[in-house]
Image (cartoon, rainbow, N blue to C red; front, side):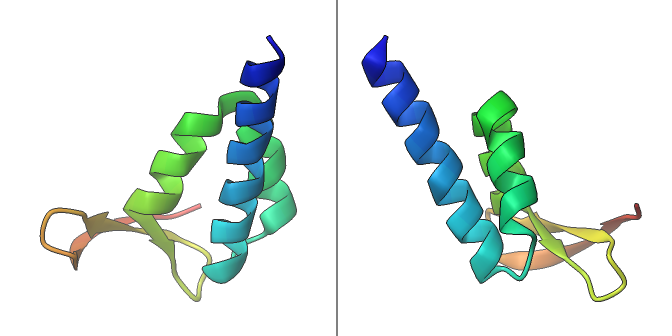
Length: 72
Protein backbone atom coordinates (compact mmCIF):
# COMPACT_ATOMS: atom_id res chain seq x y z
CA UNK A 1 0.00 0.00 0.00
CA UNK A 2 2.82 2.40 0.83
CA UNK A 3 4.40 1.74 -2.55
CA UNK A 4 1.20 2.66 -4.38
CA UNK A 5 0.88 5.93 -2.47
CA UNK A 6 4.54 6.76 -3.09
CA UNK A 7 4.27 6.06 -6.82
CA UNK A 8 0.98 7.97 -7.18
CA UNK A 9 2.47 10.96 -5.34
CA UNK A 10 5.59 10.82 -7.50
CA UNK A 11 3.44 10.80 -10.63
CA UNK A 12 1.55 13.86 -9.34
CA UNK A 13 4.85 15.72 -8.77
CA UNK A 14 6.15 14.76 -12.22
CA UNK A 15 2.91 15.94 -13.84
CA UNK A 16 3.13 19.25 -11.97
CA UNK A 17 6.70 19.72 -13.22
CA UNK A 18 5.69 18.92 -16.81
CA UNK A 19 2.78 21.36 -16.57
CA UNK A 20 5.11 24.06 -15.25
CA UNK A 21 7.59 23.52 -18.11
CA UNK A 22 4.75 23.85 -20.62
CA UNK A 23 3.49 27.09 -19.01
CA UNK A 24 0.42 25.54 -17.39
CA UNK A 25 -0.71 25.77 -13.77
CA UNK A 26 1.36 23.24 -11.79
CA UNK A 27 -0.99 23.32 -8.79
CA UNK A 28 -4.03 22.53 -10.93
CA UNK A 29 -2.30 19.59 -12.59
CA UNK A 30 -0.83 18.35 -9.29
CA UNK A 31 -4.27 18.27 -7.66
CA UNK A 32 -5.81 16.67 -10.72
CA UNK A 33 -3.08 14.03 -10.72
CA UNK A 34 -3.90 13.06 -7.16
CA UNK A 35 -7.33 11.92 -8.37
CA UNK A 36 -6.77 10.74 -11.95
CA UNK A 37 -2.98 10.63 -12.31
CA UNK A 38 -2.41 8.56 -15.48
CA UNK A 39 -5.15 10.41 -17.38
CA UNK A 40 -3.54 13.77 -16.56
CA UNK A 41 -0.23 12.40 -17.86
CA UNK A 42 -1.89 11.49 -21.16
CA UNK A 43 -3.52 14.92 -21.32
CA UNK A 44 -0.16 16.63 -20.80
CA UNK A 45 1.51 14.47 -23.45
CA UNK A 46 -1.23 14.77 -26.07
CA UNK A 47 -2.11 18.49 -25.88
CA UNK A 48 -0.51 21.91 -25.81
CA UNK A 49 -2.12 25.04 -24.41
CA UNK A 50 -2.65 27.93 -26.81
CA UNK A 51 -2.22 31.62 -26.00
CA UNK A 52 -6.00 32.11 -25.91
CA UNK A 53 -6.38 29.34 -23.31
CA UNK A 54 -7.64 26.56 -25.59
CA UNK A 55 -6.02 23.16 -26.00
CA UNK A 56 -4.39 21.96 -29.21
CA UNK A 57 -4.13 18.23 -29.87
CA UNK A 58 -0.70 16.95 -30.92
CA UNK A 59 0.07 14.19 -33.39
CA UNK A 60 2.14 11.96 -31.13
CA UNK A 61 3.21 9.64 -33.95
CA UNK A 62 4.74 12.29 -36.21
CA UNK A 63 5.54 14.96 -33.63
CA UNK A 64 3.61 17.66 -35.48
CA UNK A 65 0.47 19.56 -34.49
CA UNK A 66 -2.92 18.44 -35.72
CA UNK A 67 -5.55 20.91 -36.83
CA UNK A 68 -8.12 19.75 -34.26
CA UNK A 69 -8.58 22.32 -31.51
CA UNK A 70 -10.47 22.25 -28.22
CA UNK A 71 -11.83 25.44 -26.64
CA UNK A 72 -12.53 25.94 -22.93
